Amino acid sequence: MIKLRNLEKSFRSGAGETFVLRRVTNDVEKGEFVTIMGPSGAGKSTLLAILGMLDGDWRGEYYLMGEPVHAIKPRARIELNKKYIGFVFQQYHLLDDLTVYENLEIPLSYRNVRRKERQAIVADALDRFNIVGKKDLYPSQLSGGQQQLVAVARAVIAEPAVILADEPTGSLHSSQGRMIMDLLKQLNSEGTTIIQVTHNEEYARFADRIIQLKDGWIVDE
Image 1: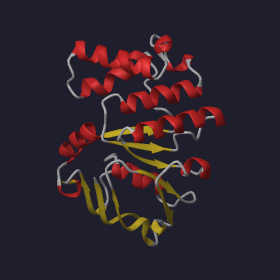
Image 2: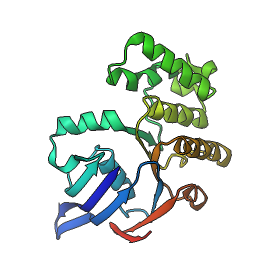
Image 3: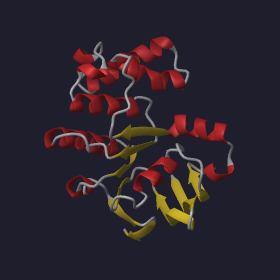
Image 4: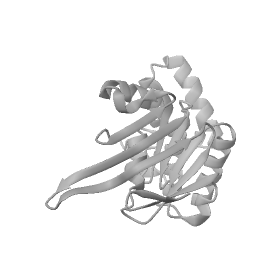
């Protein structure tokens, strides 16, 4: 599903060139659950942003579902992102001026899903995530755990092939964090490929394998 070959990212500094990622080569198979770990500054979130096509300033080869991401234009990358990727952020990134229902509807509108069909899909998601009673509330009216639950629902509502989760439990207390991880594991068991970044060793073990990054290099797997 994902093939990386000699992926590198750097920026110019006074001393020359500082690398954030170095010669990252790896494959992720369809249906895998992969954890990326490493100390702060190791390049974990940068790698996830590249995989999600939120960052286009890098070198090397990246294939997603056979498409050469490194060789296509920015507009085509955006279309790939919308077609295949769901993103879960630590800080939720819900739109404050929209209700829970409206936040869930947005990814479907990006894919030109018809209004009546959107209504049915959102209703199913609200039911599945047990947030029917929250549908008319705004993010500020929800707890952290509830906001993250909505964020996960939004990430999966359009049935992406891949979920990228950047510290999805980092802002939650332990019971809420475990709930989110159980949910991700369930989605993975249903066939969704998941790549998560985490510092939490317990949650890292939910994955099929763990990739260790240090100073931009893969140092262990």
